[in-house]
Image 1: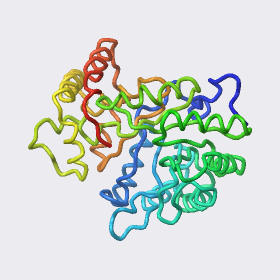
Image 2 (image 1 turned 180 degrees about the vertical axis):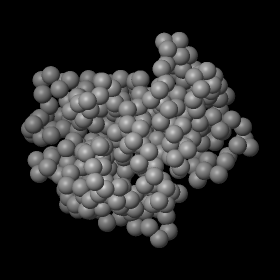
Image 3 (image 1 turned 90 degrees about the vertical axis):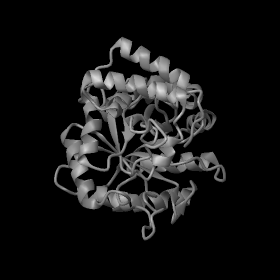
Length: 332
C-alpha cells in the first residue's frame, strides 16, 4: 500500500463513518471492564452507548491483568459477549491494542500474531477495526512491527493499524518505513490529550497527524477525572481508584481551566465532563475522545457531549485558559 502522494488519503474518517457528517464525540474506553465494573453493568453500558449513537469501543488485551486473579483480556471477553448478540457487531467500531499482555509482550512479529489471534477469540469477531500497538517497543525493530501489522491487514484480521503513545519522531519513522516498503501504514493514533495536558500532543504529535491526515483518539480525555470538576480542593479525592492521579493536576493554572469548564457546563445544562469531551471532539482529526464510565449514569453525563454546541467565544475561553494550564506539571 505505502503512503499515497495525496497525504489526506490516509484520513480514514469517510471509511469508518460513511453515514455521519462527523463522528460521535465520545469513544468508549473500557479499561474499567473486569476491574471496577463487572460484566452485568458493563453490558448495560455498552447497550446505552450504542443506542445513543456511540461508535467506537476501545479496549486492550492487557485490561485488566493488574487485578489479582485476572490474567488480561477480561475487558475484551466482556465486549465479546456483547458483540455476539445479534446485530451488535455491525453497529460499532472495535478498537483494541497489543504489546502489553503477559503472554504476548512486546511488538515482535511473533507477539503481535499471538496477541491478535487471542483478541479475536475473546472479542468473538473475525476482524478488528482499529488495532493499536499499546506502547512503543524500542527492543523490537520498528520495521518488524510495521511489517507484522501490515500482514494482518492483508489477511483481513485487522482493518487499520494504529499507534498508541508514540512520539512524533517514532510515528514519522514508522510511516516512512511503510512508505518505502509498500506496507499498510499507521492510520490512527492514540495519545494523551486534554484541556490540562496540551503541549506534549500539540507540539510533538499533532504536526505529524495533521500532515499525514491520521485519525486521532485522544486518551486521558478527562485527566483521570480532574476535568469532571469533582477535584477542586485537597479534600476531594473521592472514591475513584484514580483519585490520587486526578489530584496531581490540582494546580492554580489547572483550576482556572476547570472554572471556565464549569461555567460553560452550567450555562449549557450539562456536566463539565461533557464540555471537556466536546472540546476534544472539536479538534482537528479527532474521531472520538476516549473516556470510560463505571455506571450508566456516568455514561449519560458523557453522552450529553453530543448535544453540546461550543460557540466561538466558548472555544476561545477554553483555549485561553487551558493554554496557560498546559505549562503546569503533568502526570500520566
